[in-house]
Length: 266
Image (cartoon, rainbow, N blue to C red):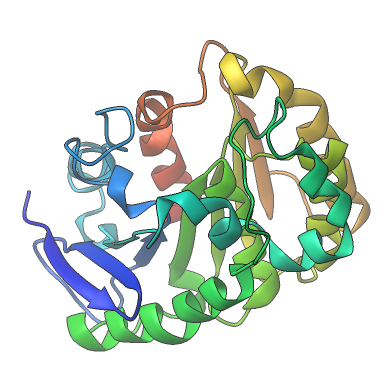
């Protein structure tokens, strides 16, 4: 697997390009870049296995749908929460900070300087245009997706809210909706663009941190349905019994996420 390394401002970027690129090659931007390609830098020594999934599941059947994959690193892991957290929701519900250091966010955070909007601006106005120009693809909004897990899943949904003109799909695995006892999910549902022009994949397991997700996911799904999002067309939520909150679990199902996104491009 050939991975190229780049730098855009504060953010290190890693890229995998399919064997053949064309103007219509889909573009996939992934958060938490250190976990995407390299097991040596991954948090638990296991990657997302996303390239392997493309080569195994997509290339033999739809070689033209193999995406350009851009992995964006968090510049400072000690401030990952501030980078990925949906800023507008955190500002609307500052009581979410009260959970930091508790059971749903176990690490201590002393710096409450949010950079979520800045991060989303970098993705939409710098990373995506750079990828298109550098690799010679046009990747329309419909063929451009953003993907992440946990806090990265929240950031993927927030991407649709902040820059709906850039992203066609948000792929959100093990979305950390329990923040604020559901206030995070309610805030995001309010911010998402109207249904009809975007697609959302969501999923969750039932082990470790994911064991708390089902009721919050059900509440979020209901919020989207009330706003007109059509289950199975605009949005799909899939439970994965036995899956925990780790790259190992996400790599076990990323092929299903990719197939849903890519085969739905038409």
